Image (cartoon, rainbow, N blue to C red):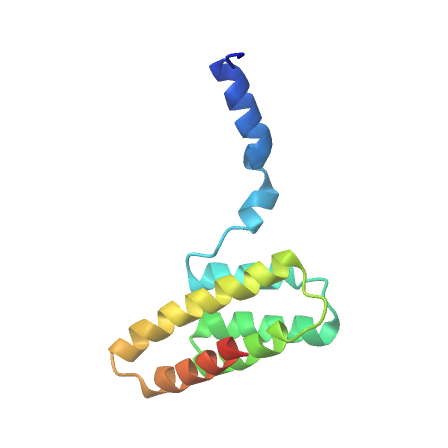
Length: 126
């Protein structure tokens, strides 16, 4: 059995992980609503116009805290045909961020967040 030295292992790991390429950054899950909004805008920049407009509306609604509008727009985007892997990740990241934001708002007694969460649950059930 042959032993692989540390330098070879590091080289292989670097190649497998993409050496910190920009593409890897685009595929990470967003950690804030603003990141989720930017990610969804990038992912849908070249989508058909109707889908791109819905993605832009979702992004803007995420930034502004317009929860019901964000859910409706994300539902439209999610229903689009031929969604790419990157677009799917952007939708997922936006949905996760929206759900986290809604949970915090619901805990503070927001009725609009409660309504938006009901819409989000219905979207996720589909």
